[in-house]
Length: 91
Image 1 (cartoon, rainbow, N blue to C red):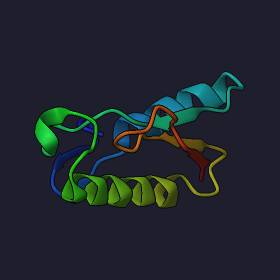
Image 2: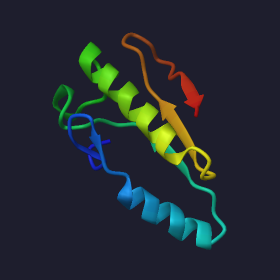
Image 3: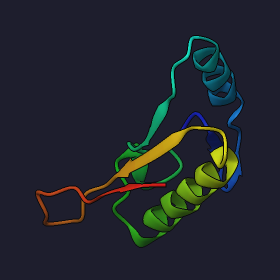
Image 4: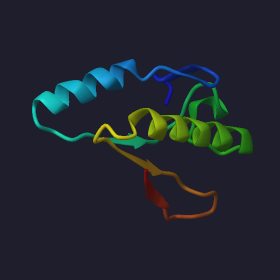
């Protein structure tokens, strides 16, 4: 998320667009994992605060919209506080 969102709410998917295009030429369908942290939220740790989780949700929504219809799978895996299981979703 940190390489795509360098200012709150502003997303730049250009590097992933280039990667997607390169993979498509090789016949590979990418699966982008929406995970990890962003230095803008919770000191770069995985989202823990309500504001960081909301920012991650906005990012995941933007990614799903950006890559909709392009043959890309966006996978999100996050952990809830106090849980050892990671709920997963495909968009």
